[in-house]
Image (cartoon, rainbow, N blue to C red; front, side, top):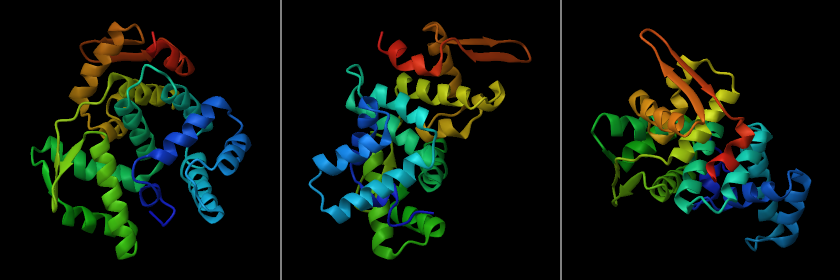
Length: 249
């Protein structure tokens, strides 16, 4: 359930997420990340606000996902070969992994609208759907939904008007897909479950899209992907922690 400390209530442009994850590249010691945030105060927060944002980051990311995934993501976010758009896609995907409401909205509203070719969604319907999931106060609900829409816009997933949004024919970067795929590999998912994973829907990919992306990674010698008559093989050729370096070649 979203609360007043939820990610979508607390930031509009992913700045806080990017900042914290970037810092994890410099030092995986969380206490040092916290010290840097409090002492440098990059967002010019009051002490109360700093405490609030740190608690949000701690509960939203650190309590929701294994630290090693954030460390790998940090290496990628800090790399020179990624555009801001790809960095935003990566943060968006990992946020969906951590946030069931964000994931639910993305899969059941945005992904569905794209695949059903009914790509205009009234904002009112998004508010109503989110209200059922969260039961936030009205002003918090409006802020959370508006920020979610702004994040979608930052990823180039939607355009929006005053009363509706339009879902674009979005295709994520192969880098974003690779991170999601290797995350699933690391979760020890069997090949058929990987192929059908709803986590690819966070970046608006159906099973046919996934097959095409897998072919690209196969050509890059990153995975083994063999389709047979009644089965297929799918496995990594590199370790997850090698992904940032491999993608930078």
